[in-house]
Amino acid sequence: MRKIIIGILMLSLFLTGCGNTEMASNPLPEDAFWTIAHRGASAYAPENTLASYDLAEEMEADYIELDIHLTKDGEIVIMHDEDVERTTEGTGYIADYTLSELKELSADFQFEDKEETIYRVPTLAEVFDQFGDEIHYFIELKDSDKDEGIEEALIDLLEQYDMIGTAKDGKPRTVVHSFSEKRLQRVHELNQKIPLVKLISFKDEKFPELTQHEVDDILKYGAGIAINYEFLDRTVIKQMHEEGLLVYATAVQDAEAALHMKEIGANGIYTNRPDLLENGEAE
Image 1: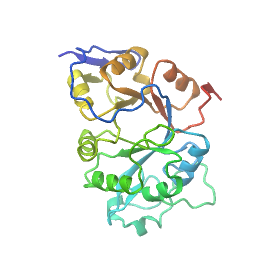
Image 2: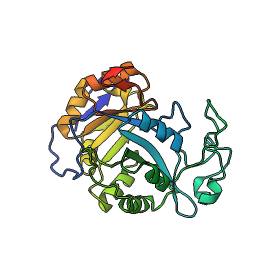
Image 3: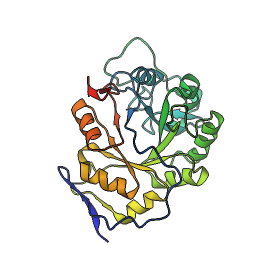
């Protein structure tokens, strides 16, 4: 079986053909190009806060991207890390805090442009209460052993707020993505109507590899993949499309790169700056 060899400056793809007939039942639109606000408009407001999501909505992002964990008392809260130390003044793991204890912390601890406003760690329910389906969601499940049962809790909340399925603008209300194949497979087992995207990072490998077998495994549950934009070119995107996977580029922070990803056929970009593109042109 041949491998997909991806270099930092050039990505060469050697696939043995389509062959996998067991496809995921959660397709995403193939002709869309989405701006996915990474942790909200996190270049301009503290990441994963209501303020960051509000700004992303003002900037007309297609999706806000957010990361979830479970508190000690089983509430779904939004924070990237599994501990609180980088973004708050607290210490320790989210799983060791109750929601009320977590709400006492400020969520902008290391944000450069601090204001007098105190930002709190939001719950996923609070985000849904504030935004509903006026904006849509890329929700990341972290590969953490401290979030046992989070897939079930997430789907319960998505069902409660009617966040599964297609919104009035034709976009899926919610997409779930993760580096963890195990978590994505569990979501697929629980509800096959939720589109899933496999996050893939090659930043620590000089010559990263993705085998045909791995592509086929993703196709069993996933609708797309998200890869560092430096590793993407027109050829690999085309061949991934031929395999049946959409391709999203992470994490794009300048307009030139964003436009390039659109031109070579990527299906969207993750960015901390959702105002990078306006009507298809750089601002």
